[in-house]
Image (tube, rainbow, N blue to C red; front, side, top):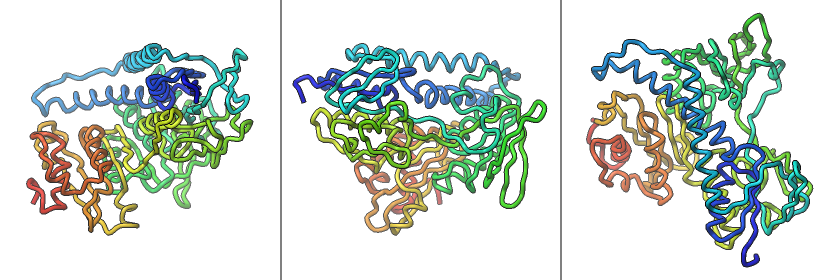
Length: 460
């Protein structure tokens, strides 16, 4: 590497822009090419806007339960246009902040689509300008998945990005796909007053989540008024009058669901087709770029990070991978660890987890499982948010914590303690014997651990 190395980053999302800032602070000359909006999917069409919408849904739920706290609300009106406007303002504020950080770091931001010329050079297609660098990081992210059924390209079929651009609230929506994105959107729309049906191909909602926790979330989703059909295989979509009809099968039975709009949320897949990695021989398998533990591809000097490498597609992991890549480019040897990667679902109730599920841990370990219900937690009682629990899975011999799963109030904030603990290979005893402030929701983590080390205080 020269004294001032030149790093080129393709993609300004949550893998690319943190990597650019880190590389600049480490002394590199950085160019960042983004074909769309700085911040990528997460800031513009994913994490941030969806959470802004879910916050509006939370306000509706609070108003509905206000009398519990001695406050009488005499009805409310949903101004869908104002809800969407607030979402846009949140996104705009954060993207402006990121742009300001890039400017402060003297990072050269180029608007356009990059294509490889050779292993050290890319061309910006819109201008024809060629940019050469000592190392290149591919961080082009992912795009919504689809399913090969008739009618899937109909005018009333939306992906998650298109749903965020709705200008009016649909009276009814069928959500195809009951994963994280599908359930979050379903809960938001239902809170706004839309009639919602979820069709999920797997036996339960949010596949991959600890089964006990997923079952509780599914129960609460149904209780909120959302129709949930699991084991449903979609066969086609047809326009009939003013509605769209989705035909699906459950086992050997055929059924239909109709709605004004259809929302397709069947996952995401890596997106690197515009940059022509085959020209320089970058290896990819099963639709994802292959990297080593240092985030380097098979071509020296070319790295990749974020959704484009497949695996766990989460914004915070993408950022960690991007920073890992530039550290290695600039001579600081670093390796990615996927042992303690948190996952969050911003539904009601919230769900968060880290490590192995009970099912997975039981396949390779002699395990012990501790649980503590939020109904026995003082702060949860104060909040009148009693549903859910903290669940800790530990190794039966060493006591090391293998997984933590939380469903309930502020689960997505609480999980950080468990992530740090697992990163430091803490035991259930370490969690149990750490003094937690009172009254707080975090005490539920301590008491769940106590059930594995002599018994919790606030349950029999």
